[in-house]
Length: 52
Image (tube, rainbow, N blue to C red):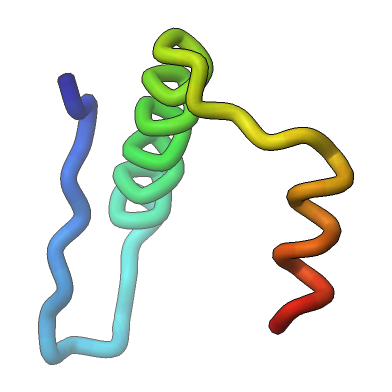
């Protein structure tokens, strides 16, 4: 269940509500991942960051 869905537009201005929608959407995804056991160790996360 997604709390919020951010949509892209051609406009380059964003409101605080747009930012909150994105933040809440990401938080909802993270909670869902944790509840379903889709997590990374710290070492895996750093390896992914270093690969970029």
